[in-house]
Length: 80
Image (tube, rainbow, N blue to C red; front, side):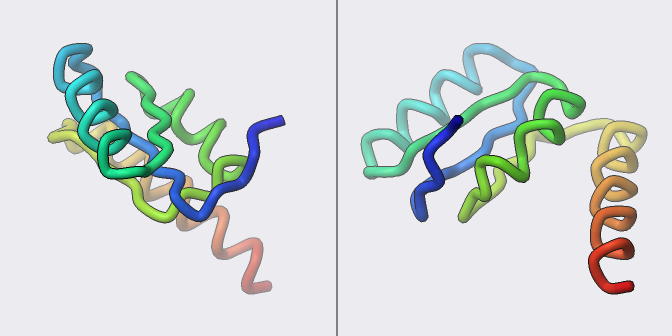
């Protein structure tokens, strides 16, 4: 079980060097960063982490559409 922290930040970045850099910067600022390289793993871990901030890299339209559709489906179920 991952502890829920008000300082959780989730990073979706396929490039390892950029992902490591962002994780390092956010850690230095006192945040708890969690990074993922694919949107499937990112979406699977999003709810349990309950992040205060989400950082997305420059993704293709197809990959961004998957994320948007996930949020649409999730919040349509919650509002009904």
